[in-house]
Amino acid sequence: MSNILTITSQPARTRESLVYKTLSSIWWETDGQNITNKIKNMTKFGAVVGTLTGILGVGVARPRFFYGGISVFTRCFVPITAAGATYAIVTNTLGMKRGKSDRINHAVGGFLAGAISGGGIARNYKLAFISGFTLCIFAACLKTYAMENMEGEGQSTFYSTRN
Image 1 (tube, helix red, strand yellow):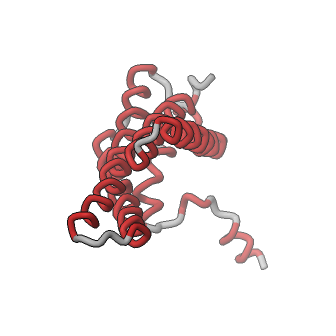
Image 2 (tube, helix red, strand yellow):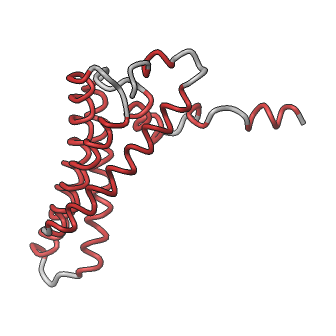
């Protein structure tokens, strides 16, 4: 019985999945460190999500011509890929400039990434604001979760400057 408790009581971030290893550095590491790796990983993640969204968009739109399908795919793929890169660039730049690794960096990065993805796909300012605000809240919550779970593991000094 104790073996089961030992296995299940390990922190969730010890999992070795490819997606987890790729994305965990954004929230678990200090903002402003390991920047090129974070930008590369988030751009890859954005490209994968953009590809899946583009394929779904082509399936829903069912264009009659090949070039119409490319247009629909590109309209989904490009903004989401750019949003992934923007999120990593903004959070790390703010982390370097502010000297803090906190939820504000991720809220700003999330808002800009959401505005790019929502506005780029729908070409609508209202949807850009709504998606930006939604991703702002989501990114700030993820960073808050990471900050709370780093306490007590000997790594809380990364977040000693938080508000």
